[in-house]
Amino acid sequence: MTAISSSGRGLKRLAALTCVALATGGLVASGVTGAEPGTARASSHREAPLISGQPQYDNTDVYAFVSPDKPDTTTLVANWLPFEEPGGGPNFYKFANDAQYDVHIDSDGDAQGDLIYRWTFKDHVKNGNTFLFNTGPVTSIDDPDLNITQTYDIEMLRLKNQRVMHSTKIADDLPVAPSNVGKASMPDYQSLRDQAVKQIAGGSTAFAGQADDPFFADLRVFDLLYGGNLSEVGNDTLKGYSVNSIALQVPTAYIRQSEKQPIVGIWSTTQRKSASGHWAQVSRLGMPLVNEVVIPVKDKDKFNASHPWNDGDFLKFVTQPELPKLIEGIYKIKAPAEPRNDLVSVFLTGVDKLNKPPHVRPAEALRLNTSIPPSAEPKRLGVLDGDNAGFPNGRRLTDDVLDIALQVVEGELVGAKNDLGDAVNENDQKFTGSFPYLALPTAGSRGPLAKDGAAKDAQGNLLSGGASSASSGSDFTDNTLIASAVAAGAGVLLVTLGLNWWRMRRRNAYR
Image (cartoon, one colour):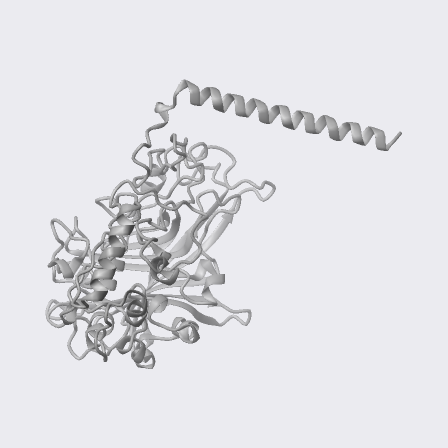
């Protein structure tokens, strides 16, 4: 991580701090051991006060991209329920059954949805007389031993002026891929994932279930912007955590207005059913990081309940952003001049000659030009690095949105060239080459531990980003095994002595 800026003294200070951090191992690009689940609580996923207490309804990220292996289709991915700890049983993670999970498509740039894909979920319990999520090893998505399951429907709604003109159910009672309890319970989780991918009406493909959180970033930005001296960068705060994902791959012709107007705006919302039976929007997300670091605390809940066509209410937070002023105050890098119309193009209207639709109404939505083909070799900085198939033209799983957003906010598009970032350049697990493209969730058992205690993935492989000395479970030495056996024996002895002491006290009390 470096900084390139015309700020003179601020640049020198930032460079010096960077060197200090590098010297102490804070910014090592490889071999960094990421934070494990349980260490991160200040999340960019928990973007507003009210929704932070309702994780089942909390949108975390939205992705939209032309499918790399099927370029006549577009893939939509939306995630909910942040920071799922792999061992979070016996009540593992599920979608809410009193919610409508929606992905909105605006095909003409007026900030109103022309098409909505809506997911609703149902719970199923085979045996209510056990605490177990599964009552034995699960080898198929319909295994009788999978005690708690969910199914879902998908409805496609066509709208005009926000009125539903036509509704079609395109999927009915599809299975949700379960939480990855562990290798003893789910010895081949990949097969469960594969069985949860379903072909549906109209040549589309659907998936819903748990997945590794694809967002990669060092979220300690909230500790006064990386500790005040860049000492807190280089750890993927999301490493090892999962989310609940919905993914849909649809023929591109379904969602765009025409070949002449191929740009679509995309955002997700969650509606929750109230006690009175009415639906209320409680979460909304399109472009990443907007509600987290652009909208102030007093308006965060309002933003979550609002609609894109009213985003003029929040315009001043984009044209007069707080973040550059904070960076200037801490690192002395001069904030770009206001008003920030460059940020309006990136976050509200789309960029000219890239993904800005004609007659656009400024609104916070992920804008995708579906006529731009997938890149053979995607670049993590997307458009900033000459890859027009990447963010902010839609968002691919591999796009480093935090680095891109930070560089843009610091003036990359108005002549203040810089190379700012958080030193986390890729996800800790590799994405797949076919739908739904998401990496598998970390197993609840975490698999056998390596020498350094590093976690393993769904199939028991060491998660990338671990210490360089980490090795496979088969590398355990005899001394390690002996030490483990001694420790286990000592534990048994202590428990036995404790039980005997407790029994003696009980006997004496009754004499």
